[in-house]
Amino acid sequence: MRALLLTRYGGPTAAELREIARPEPGAGEVLIRVRAAGLNPVDYKIRQGMLKPVQRFALPVVMGSELAGVVEANGEGAARFAVGDRVFARMPKERMGAFAEYAVVPEALLARMPPSLDFEAAAGVPLAGLTALQALRDELHLSAGSRVFIPGGAGGVGTFAIQLAKWLGAKVITTASPRGRALVERLGADVVIDYTTQRFEDHVRDVDGVFDLLGGETLKASFGVVKRGGTVVSIAGLPEPQTARKDLGRGGALTLLFWIASFGLRARAWKHGVRYRYLFMHPSGTELAELARLIDDGKLEPITDRVFPFADIGEAFAYLESGRAKGKVVVRMPD
Image (cartoon, rainbow, N blue to C red; front, top):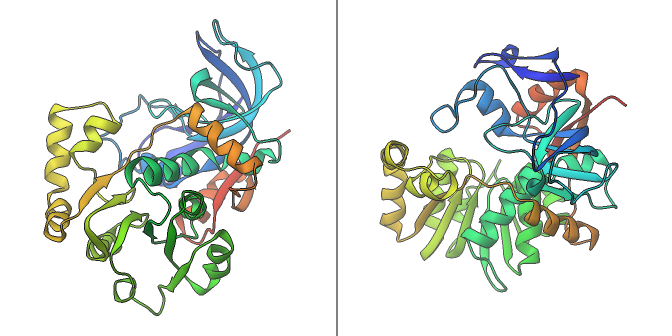
């Protein structure tokens, strides 16, 4: 089968398409014929070696974090899905494997695709959708009447986050360029700040929480717009000690490393009387099934920016890394 193999850490040429042996499912696993796979910033950060302190892979390794496809075979003890079922999944963090014609996935991470979606749309749901759900519901605890600020709402995670925040009953404030404004308004954003001409900190005050998707100066300024006792959750800042313990199941040296790395951000949060949390989402077939129900009920619309043939995955990554995408970037496997 053909797969995108990471052979070393570095730039775009560090990963290459190669012919490798098809994997076989073990106990509790399912073999999927991949029909489409979603691209995410975490994929090129892994390629660049930015996540080596958190997760080191035995190279070469097949890349890819999320997929949609058809059940090809079940391993021993796997019985929830029948051969031919249309499914999607966020791959295990320690293994990856979505950028291939076939992939092995633990049964517990799979969910049935929403019947209303094609493979390309479904492939862009798992990572971004689960990230937004876990950040907004489990960390920010949004409910009816909450006010949340989501900078960068037109991106892959942002398009899910706006809709899920509205589903939870919150009022949503976001930033977008003039090109992205119509999209975020259609998805339900109540207030849209044009970041090309306005500073959000001049317009946002006393929100219950922030879901930071951008990091950098945006994250630093976000602490000042949250009311005391609120929370800033980031997927683009620096990991903090709870990230090591809760999200990664680690302690000791990694907890200390994250404590040091995040000290400046935590000090800024303390100064403003708010909590800082960096989130590494966790794969979950159960929660993915929840997202599927929301999609079929018309409460959640996956937004796909562009679909590339698998043979052009290098071009797809270049487009993703350019920062121009509005919604998800996906590759389609050959028939």
